[in-house]
Structure formats: C-alpha cells, structure tokens
Length: 271
Image 1 (cartoon, one colour):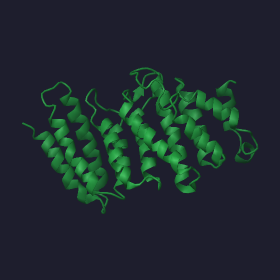
Image 2 (cartoon, one colour; image 1 turned 90 degrees about the vertical axis):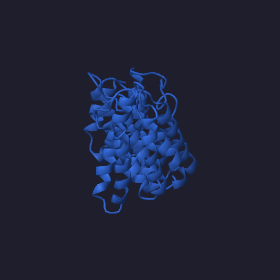
Image 3 (spheres, helix red, strand yellow; image 1 turned 120 degrees about the vertical axis):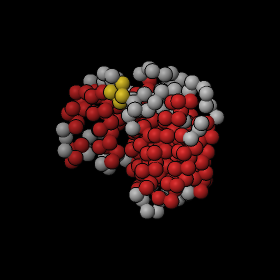
Image 4 (cartoon, one colour; image 1 turned 135 degrees about the vertical axis):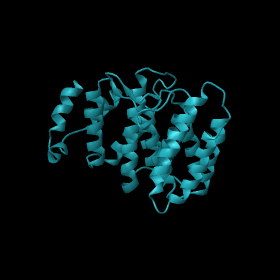
C-alpha cells in the first residue's frame, strides 16, 4: 500500500462516503508509519486523518480502544526511548498526540474501561520520566515536539473524569521532568504547552500545586555553580512566567500569581 496515495484519496471523500469503507487496513498502516520522517505524510496526512476519524465519530469503540492500546505500546510511545537525536522521537511524539485524541473523545463518550484509562495514564507518567529527546523543530523533518505533544496528552488525561485528584502528585512529578530541563533551552513554546495540564489540575486542586510551585526554586538553586544551572534557571523561569500570565487574568486562579512571583524572585535573587 502506498500510504500517501491512499490517504490523498480518502481525505477527499465526503463523510457519508467515508462511513461505507472498512477503515481497519488504513488504520493499521497509519499506525505503522505514524513516525514517518516525511513531515507531509506524518503531520498533514496521518495525524490529520486520524483526527478526522477519531473526532468525527467514524470509528467504533473497539477500533478506538485498539488505537489507544497500540499507540501506548513499546513500538510506539516507547519506540527507541533510550535514544537522543534520532528519528525514533517522531514515532513516540506522534503516538502521544493520537493517544490524546482518543482520550479527549472518551471524556465525552466514556467507552474506555477504567483499567485502560489508568494504563494510559501510567504509561504517560513513565514516558515523561523516560523521554530525553526534547527537540522542537527538526530541519527537513518537521516537528518532533515531544514535550509539547506529551503536554497535550497529559492535559487530556487530567481532564478525564476517571483520573482522580489523588493521582495529581504523580502527574506533577512527571511534568517536572520536562520543566527542569538542564541541557538546552526550550525555544518552541514548550513552556506554554506545559502550563495547560497544570491549569487543568487547578480546576480541582490548588494546595498541592501551590506547594509544588514553591518547591521548584530550591531544585534550581541547589545546582548553582554547575554548568547545567544556567539552562535549568532559564527553562524554569520561562515556565513560571508562562503560568503566571496564563493565570493572572483568570479571576478564580489569579490568587496563585503571588506564589509564582515569590518563586521567581528567589530564583533570580540568588546572589
């Protein structure tokens, strides 16, 4: 199957025509090539068509469950997870995006069993702890964006009614792995995207998140004098500033801003 040619045909079909087709073969092939290094195929065809199928109610519950189970397996979300600066990141990153699509649909339709939603959450936590390839845009191959796509997935899971607030501590510890980046500086709005799952948590929980925010400065300052300190300080500051301005104009959450100000002051008044 030439996936590009097949997708070009399918993407032109009207909804009523698409509903008459057996989509299982194309789903399997898209999953197989989900991490293609061709940005047109990966971003603008596979992901866009997955989005149309999943959000447009073209798939049955068992098909959506199959997609979620495959995308979180070792050949997708954890494909070559130990590698840095290789093409494996595209498979991992775009698997997380498709996972997010399924989770978002299940928030409204609740067709997934509780244990599978929890498995997706636990796999996402593990992924945040293990992903080391934090590149944003890759020349000639397009967006890797593992951090931004991972944040989208975490946000969807936090919003899911089956993820209780008692799991937020694990989520915060996982997000922290990306916030406290100490080798390289984020340049592709990763800090903005990492704010979204925090904001989603704040709908239900505040005390634990405020405590977590207050703990960030000590983790930055304890490596002062080491070569990794400068990047760690920049990434953490940018994240906190993004969170600050995201919450500042939200009447119900603006009370957190003075806490963020205090942490930023500690980070920058470190002499």
